Length: 354
Image (cartoon, rainbow, N blue to C red):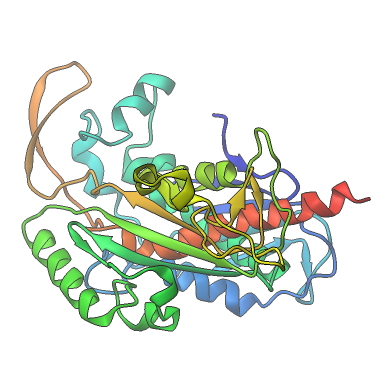
């Protein structure tokens, strides 16, 4: 299986399955001499872990990370950083009923047809549990570029949408509620909606928005490795993501060029930011902002029609512990993937000047 690595100068390779012994990763390219706050790494894992509130999967995993190499006395050595997160609460029997059947809109069918074998326990390698490794690497990447700030938050659940622009948002409120929406009143409505959907054995999608601040000018390349292209790849690689837009996005098509162009101030900043902090694939020093759309979770705790390996029509009902809406736990994953991209380009810029 290819495609288990992400990044060029700062590269993450992950391994492990949802119901295997554990998941882990190797970070290659992290410079020596970076003092790591390992408690901050664990804190990011705690933001992503299951069982943290009543509106997420109730699988109980401590998600404690152990480092095996690349870190000595809290400082990076420049060698590959190896880490592991052990699985502690597998209930593989919850997935016995899908051993020979396919859940609609899940990776079950395509995985089986491509490889001829699949770990059906929790989706195996296709499970969103793989993202635990990304959060570890992203937390380390953030400490490599501490001046850059990452603020992701839930801006939509179903049709309930936060109408404020990112400039009107108090990011300190994001962690004040289990939905991770920085508008407490709207967060309450979102939470109630998720609970209602869950009670029906159904699922709902949503949107995570992200703002990256204090970005230096010059990150990104102008052709295939545009900064927004790499951010798009990073976000679209997250499980359940169906859409990515940055800056004015699709709404920008309604504007004329005279309205959409970001006029310069004398210091090189722009008076508006429809470009979303990136022009010609290169950061211009303004805030980078983007939105990531997550589909409803494919596994339903209600009866549905599907097929088995032989193509026979069968009726199935999901079992086990699943998120009724993934966006609350996706917030730290979006931040982590954004940090991996920015750290990678930061190091590539450094290498280009040697």
